[in-house]
Structure formats: structure tokens, C-alpha cells
Length: 167
Image (cartoon, rainbow, N blue to C red; front, side, top):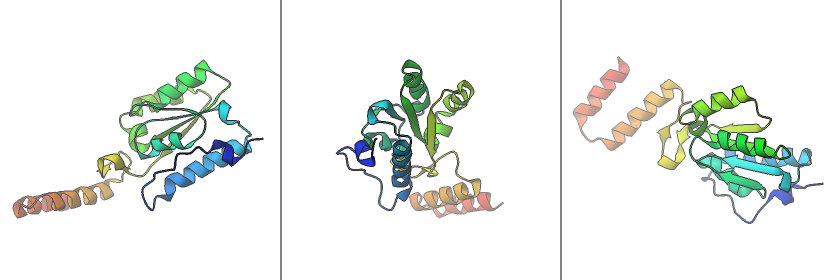
């Protein structure tokens, strides 16, 4: 029977300080594969690009770190090529619902027997704070205004932006 130690490798997770979101997901997935008694050689962890997709490198299992928005098609190909593997695909919100949205919709329609985990942190973290597709509009407007205020030093532009946003 597999244990949590069987899925650990020597790579130390490199999540941003204070980010318990991804460490919690990693622990939950480990608990799930242990509970289902899936040996590491029967597990494939496929990921896209971004903070969420680091997770594949922290499992001792088969895996691939694919291109942005393409984790699902890759994972479907792995599963269709080897039906004996348990396949888990990981994406961030941008990976799944921006550049990869077309693949997400078609993956749902194909209904391949695999697991898809989307980790939503409302930001493209690797580009230092770009808002992702699932950010609520009110938060997006506030965040964009703060970014503009910090990057522009022209009072007339700031004033105009405030007038537009508050009208």
C-alpha cells in the first residue's frame, strides 16, 4: 500500500511566502491518491504554466510541465494513450479560463476519465500581479486604478482615470 512518503521527491516546494493554498492542494491530492491506493508508477501529474503548475514537480510520479493553457489536451492524450494511468491535470485560473478556455470547454465535452484541478488565485503571479479572468469586476477596477496610480506620476491622468471609474 502506498504512503504519502512514496509521492515525495527531493525537490523542496517553492510557493510564495504565506501561500497555503497550493501546499494545501498538494497535501489533499497526496491524501487522495494514498486513500485510493494508487502507486506512484500509476500516476501522471500534468500541469500548465504558472504558480499552480509547479505542483507537478513536487510529486514523485510521471509528469509533464506543458505550455500555457495546454495542460488539458496533453493530459487527455496521456490518458488515452495509457488507460491504466490515473491522470491529474493542474492549471491556474489563467491557464484554464484565459488562454486555455477553448481546451477546457472541449475537454469537458470529451469527458475523458481523468481529474482536473484548477487553482484560482485571481492573479497571474509570475507576471507580478496581472489580474486573471475570474477576478470580480469591482476588485479588478480597484486593483487596476492602484496599479495606474503607482506607475503614473501625472496628476491630470490620475484625475481623469478617477473621473471615468467613478462615473
